[in-house]
Amino acid sequence: MKSTLITNANIVNEGKVFQGDVLIKGEYIEWIGKNRSAEGVDRVIDANGNYLLPGAIDDQVHFREPGLTHKGTIYSEAKAAVAGGVTSFMEMPNTNPPVFTHDLLEEKYNIAARTSLANYSFYIGASNDNLDEVMKTDLTKVCGLKIFMGSSTGNLLVDNPVMLENFFSHFYGLIATHCEDESTIRANTEIFKQKYGDDVPVEFHPSIRSADACYKSSSFAVDLAKKHNTRLHILHISTAKETSLFENNIPLEQKKITAEACVHHLWFNDSDYKRLGTLIKWNPAIKSESDQTEIFNALLDGRIDVVATDHAPHTLDEKQNPYFKAPSGGPLIQHSLVAMLEFFHKKKISIEMIVQKMAHNPAILYRINKRGFIREGYFADLVLVDINKPWKVQKSNIIAQCGWSPFENETFQAQTTHTFVSGHLVYDNGSFNESTKGKRLDFTLK
Image 1 (cartoon, helix red, strand yellow):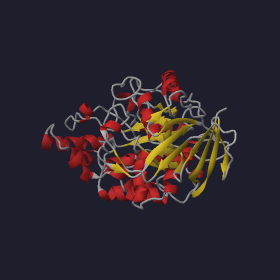
Image 2 (cartoon, rainbow, N blue to C red; image 1 turned 135 degrees about the horizontal axis):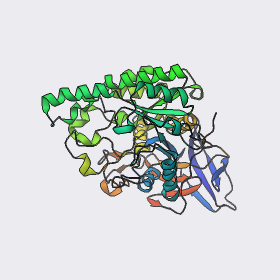
Image 3 (cartoon, rainbow, N blue to C red; image 1 turned 45 degrees about the vertical axis):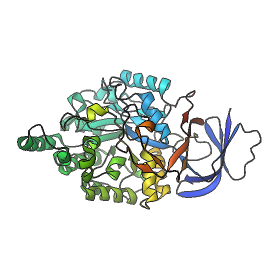
Image 4 (spheres, helix red, strand yellow; image 1 turned 30 degrees about the vertical axis):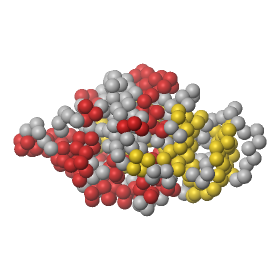
């Protein structure tokens, strides 16, 4: 087994920053300490005081394969992930065809096994008629069930109260939800169409996909989860009002109802539509500065447990369409960690809490086996970051297949220099070693 010794690192783990060395042997962290001899070690990396973090775990991405590969593939987007310090991802079922069966789910796992440079898991999707199929899910091998309680079409949209009761009362794994009330959105859409026709300005996106639409759906999901004692994880919280639905006085291991914030809802607010237009059109919508502020406060005080991206690439031509034709979503996974570290530089969040929200908490919440921490015996999913190495996001350094980013021309102070996935140095200062692929995540039941 090949071994790597990382020396002179500022190790960030479990609420502490300490100087030390880490020895990787094969896929695992064998030793953590100080002044380890390099004798017999295959490779030594001197961190020179840079920060060693557990790799980020992104619990919400859309990598577009199969069926939408003109936007991105599991290969291209996982490559962007590891360049940004994300070593594991959980991908959504709204591909083409939608993933409503375990045969389709396993096809995605097979693609990832061949092509993904990061570790991976895939949600099975809920439809209006696949409860029996969902109940076959092996919860040690699949991260959870995704229910679109809004912002979808066809059979991906599950807003029938009877069907939702069935899923919440029968499925004993984690249910991740997209919560926006479709009837509210349709009514708002008609109001703005009557005024503007098909030429609705994009800055009205948060009025159409309103705070009320989000809260109505999120509160309904929380009520269902409380009624049936369901493990519920509400994705991409976008409003201040929704943060009141979550508690911060319970250890995460004991929480049944949890929440996620996405980088774009922390970084942008509705004043940015004038500058970026449909490039920052997401569902749920980016909303007001007061919403943005309260989401950040909820992240800091523990009401919101996880930071993710909702990475959802579209081509630039698609995004530059008029409001109603421009698809929602955008590429973020390459820049999520450095964006959060920019908040660290601005003294808005500690680096220890960034690690907690992007690595430790996803591992705890999803019960991922031996990942998310820098611990002896755990998989060596590790990221070295130089927090004082400014660089500008430009088309030439964007790795996502779509080739654009809402962060273009942004200068970040921190830069990922090395990324290890299960002990394999996959990314080294701009170069990729693709000889070893990531692994399928597995999960414990308690």
